[in-house]
Image 1 (cartoon, rainbow, N blue to C red):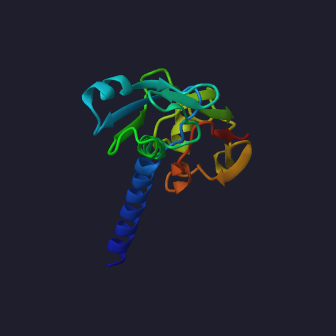
Image 2: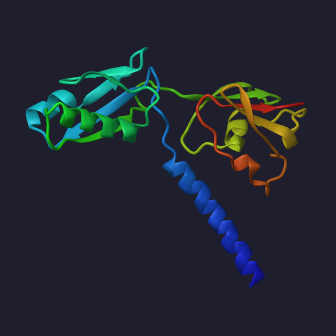
Length: 187
């Protein structure tokens, strides 16, 4: 019975980590390219609205009939609801169905940074569901001088956590990262 409980707890922890990775939605940034698709409107209007839109330096996109819409700092699902509400409030469309996606093929690259005692320090392309261990691995792994018991996860210049990534059975290495995070392996 004890073995069953341990196996069940392990499975639940794994499922929880996977669900967090899948449900994590990142905020749109300046320079991103976002795809907007709209349904529930006349087809000729949909053709002129359904496009890839670059997010300008001031964080906005320009959509037909709405002009400038703030997109930076907003999650894609929230932006879709915002655009729907704008079309409704301006009485342009009564039942628009908007979908917003971040165009990962359009040149938008988000990065995390591996620093300190890793074999190849520097930027690492961010992927959804990326963990501290994957960042370190993508940077060639720790150098012979890397102290994996006190890896620092920094976000926005502040140390978020100090992680013990020395043992495979420790889940600290499974900590999810976000774009622009810094992973510091000390010596």
